[in-house]
Length: 129
Image (spheres, rainbow, N blue to C red):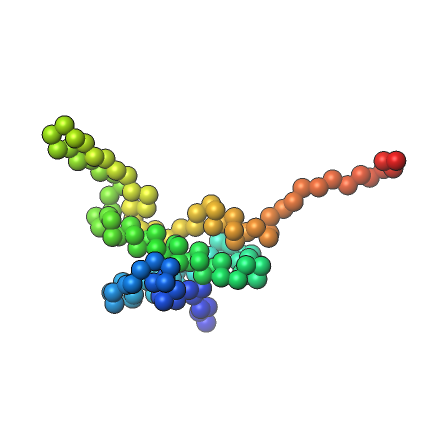
């Protein structure tokens, strides 16, 4: 049995832009994959979703948007580029050249916020007074 994705194509469109039919089909596959990745990499996702309803949907949409933006701006999968025209030079490096689905450090923090360890001390002897 496959779990439902955290977000639907309509959620992604609301957070980003309208998608054509081809993009919608791809987005649906990516949303399912992003949801699986969240479940696998963040076992405490349920606690995060309970504490902050919608956080998994938001992160899922952000992951898919990053992957789809990479394809729009970089269809060849380059990781760097340079163009020189006369005395002018442009250079660029793509952040996600292959359109990978990944969780940022901030997103991982949001999903794991309730499961992080806390440091404390316990005085074992004596009385402070």
